[in-house]
Length: 303
Image (tube, rainbow, N blue to C red; front, side, top):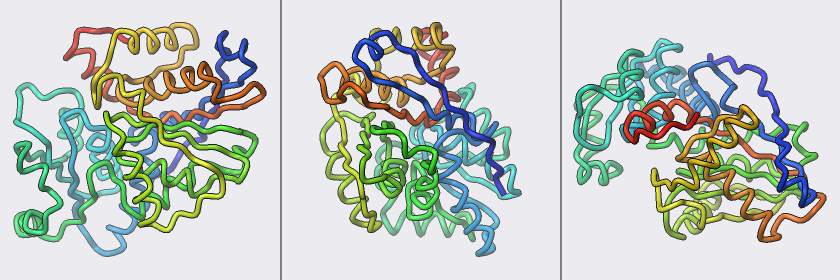
């Protein structure tokens, strides 16, 4: 089994938020486990338990070259004695970036699909091809989002979190948002910050909640204006915010998810959407493994 560590909370004494009368605390899921970090720990724990219970010897999943999910799945399978296979979007490059190098060191077999084939990865004929090629394999979807993942992410919020009025999380595939929505209290508002460009995520979240019969006791909103150009896109303004948090609060953020979430918190307070007297809880969903690869590929330091 994956054994979680105690998750610490970090209060952020940000001058702008203090001026606005808003408290901010970060729940550090990035510290829940040494190798299976952040929301991925919660997404994977029940999936891997189910795979073992059903006698599957190996896990197969999907992701990009810098995927947090690929990184975490490789580590978790290694710890639990399972084989792992990663279907990677795009062409193989040499040398491997830090994410894929780590996954390979943990025993993950890496197979590369061109972007056209990868887009069709949910098609029955391709899923059958995987079964034919790799034998008895437990398939976890890209990003890890399925019913068992939502069961896991519903455990992120506990009784100690009922004091918070507003909760923020980044959104990739929506599984963490759905789990948080399922455990929301009636007095709480959940904000999901989409890392992808476009407002399609609003409907995707609605469909996800409906598909998994998630009853939301509080209120929720999907924010689509803090993507900084789209998935894996960034601006120097975003990087400067990340550097400032690192420098001032010794609080690391990543440019794909948590940096954009923090920008959204500041932006929503500035717009008056979070009133004075609010106590905001930001869920740090991890993703820090990708920082080294980002710095290597862009030449930008986030320290």
